Length: 314
Image (cartoon, rainbow, N blue to C red; front, side):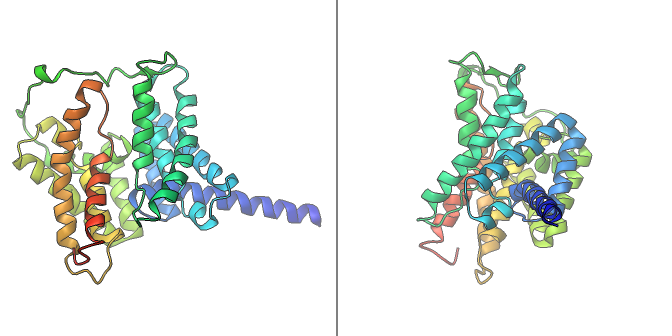
């Protein structure tokens, strides 16, 4: 009888661990929903089964570190130790090459969970969310280490460029529908039309309000980046849109009190701000060949959430 009880306990623990890991996917877009996590995992796998595997393993690693590290159970079960690990695993597996990149990606996923715990401790005193800051800093550090450590090999897609030789190219037609789907796909570094549909669906399944704000953020990104004269290839590729989507959801809904009647307006302003921030960071990082990642989203969201500590009506 004891043996059966132990088996039941093990099955229950595994199910809980699996659900927590799937929520690690959904927490990237502020959702605590395992079904949404499954849809996101499918969207990733459609683009590349290898990315699907590494992202799932990264979610397992992040959740496992949170669990054995003794983090609060509710934080582990809600996926808060998985989402930075998922993004870090994806980024490092894409931006590094060589036989060791999978091992580096999983090690990065583990460190991302530890870094997440550190940021939770420091930011709790100022009541700001950590967002994807651990993923950004850790990924940049690893990619920069490739210039001094031979075990890290940068992908050919990350090529440092001299600013004096840079030319803005705004030629070419725009496929607005493709840009709309690519906007949300770039949150997970994806490039497949069906992946974009599944990602929007994953958000709407959990919350129509979040889904609506994801759509609004995507549309704002397309319009503002076009009006400001952004490169059409970057607009079409979604490189101005993914930060805008995350920011619109965060400032308008996730971290805003319902009593705040100006929250939608401030969310739109924060979303618009991500466009020049993206352009600026892209320029700063050009000589290093580094990707912008989600730093514009983090800075714009922190700016408006910090402002609300003094101006609560915003």
